Length: 212
Image 1 (cartoon, rainbow, N blue to C red):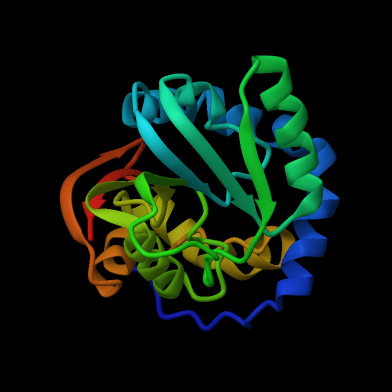
Image 2: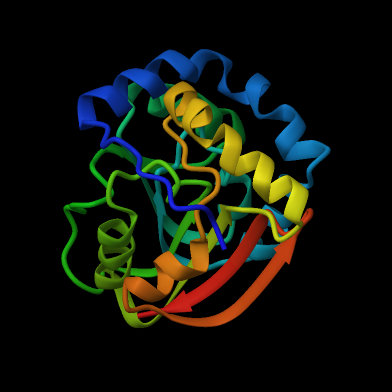
């Protein structure tokens, strides 16, 4: 279980500023996580081959885009225009047409049941109200649709988990990220049904398939 830690609530403006500032170096900053920690491998295992209308929530710099080649239509939303600028260039380089919009994940501007698949990667740790954002994902996906989440949280290995607890405040102030959260608890608190769950890399990374 994670330690009881109270985080201050970041405003939308603070989050936007943080990720606008991080955007130019974001791919470089996350290189070790994506390669040596296996995040890109887990991403491909979870997302490759998805079809239909897809929503990528908190799409950031477009790390998920390579997995969307079979989708009929893709929409990506993020709070940071700086991140979306990089994502747009990445989509163009891949030859993908993706509708990119600045939007708050906690108040998605789409009708109920708009998408066949909603995906999000390494995002709930930054949302001021992750349960609200997950409920929105459940609202905009079709009743028979899927919500695919690649998340990180508190390690199931004691020493690593304790280290995350000790450094949680510093990490949050640096990147706006609660890295010792429990992703499954958030998904269930949002009223979503978990149909598949896999943990990896010392129990830190979670691949989750859920349904409304």
